Figure (spheres, helix red, strand yellow):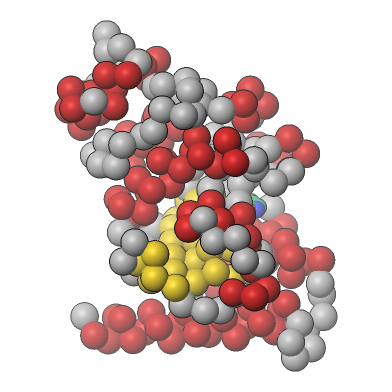
Length: 231
Ligand code: URA
């Protein structure tokens, strides 16, 4: 039996790497950080998330929503947090926003099973789909950072202001910064509009959210092709 704090000390890391750690030893306080490098693989991380009680969102969840897509994908898409359908199915972006996201990706011939790995800033559904609060994103951030390290994507797409702020701390409005490449921790990232925002703004006119997304996703596809050509 590992005690709570030891899970995240060196001995705990060895246990985690061996895949036989005691899930009851996950620190229940979100303020105890998850150290970088603690997870040897995504299955261990997922098992840990499924047992997580690091913040209040755990009490209201049906399922923990960790990821879907290809763990070796060149593109990682980070959303805000699960909605009702995601909570019920245990998979990110499977509701209306997810269906639109699929269409956007398909428009530039990106395949969700092949080309992308999809996850969220918080892994449990906030009540009534409210925006996750700072304590919740902080408690969950170590999982996201570990997902990024283990998937090691070439490009990270941050959908909406919460994803952008949750990962990078950037507080500027998403409409100001969307479509611009940024470097975060040596990684190529682009903030893009959240699909739910597009659903609320159906216009396809020049300058509309849908039009802007079309520009951005083409830029992303072109960058991916360039990266692949250089490999
Ligand atoms: N919105 C998100 O940000 N993530 C999901 O998984 C679903 C909707």
